Amino acid sequence: METKQRLLRLIKLAHGIVDRPDLEKHRQSQDQIGELIGRVKDLTFQDFDLEGMNCEWVSLNRAHVRKQVILHCHGGGYSTGSSLYARTLTAKLASCTAMEVLSFDYRLAPEHPYPAALEDALKVWDYLMHKGYGARDVILTGDSAGGNLALALTLKLKEQGRFLPRGLVLMSPWTDLTSSGESIQEKKDLDPVLTEAYLKSMLHDYAKGASLKDPYVSPLFGDFTGFPPTYVQVGENEILLSDSTRLVERMKAAGVTAKLDVFEGMWHVFQMAPFKTAYEAMDRNVAFIIEELLHF
Image 1: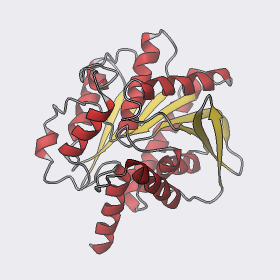
Image 2: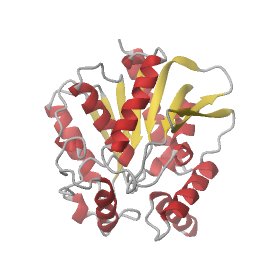
Image 3: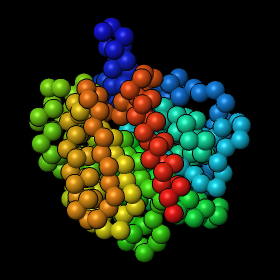
Image 4: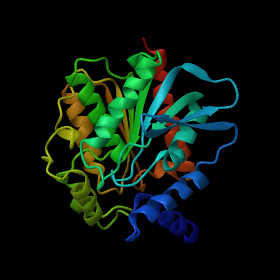
């Protein structure tokens, strides 16, 4: 029990729930957590600058897949998070899939509210296309607010009449900034990580002046017709459980191949933690990715 409590405190810190009046110091401590949890043997982390935005390639030191790539959107409520923080997930993705993973430090709120993050995601997408990857060579992944961003990016690509990624893998995606899901109230006494107050604080910083029902802010309200196959994981005890269940329901209603796994007793983005259930969940992510890459 004591070990679990320490782990939950670390996860709360990673997601910004622990009170920290100094946002910049919190972001730095979050990076330290990412470096600590994200340490995996045989991996290379290569930073590069993309028109003023820091990006990071994560890849195996040994033979690995080069034709296809994973583009990961990190979480953090749109106010925290980075490529370093994302190593809690990108290191596992690169190691388990033998694929290269690209993450990027999109601009954060409150300094840079919506649509800054979406503009940066489009910039990274264009970078991959200019490097010679095709849209179907890209698996798009995201956790929490990063899941929101992955969905918003796909909606924007669709609006622009462009080719969409091969598939989406979303971990505890934050899809509804209106907080209209039943789990917000039903799970508030069970969720060990997120609170409604935290969500309100994050959306206030990010969505200043924007409609919370704008599909690029709350992708749940978007048109998913023509979307690629999507796999969603969520914890049973999350206040954001409804964000995932309703997303998959609406995707299926639009004819999308969408699958949802709800993990018993788990919390928000539990996949970043170093324990058995997290690795089992990552194995399922990898199975989905491999299946999509082999399906023509």
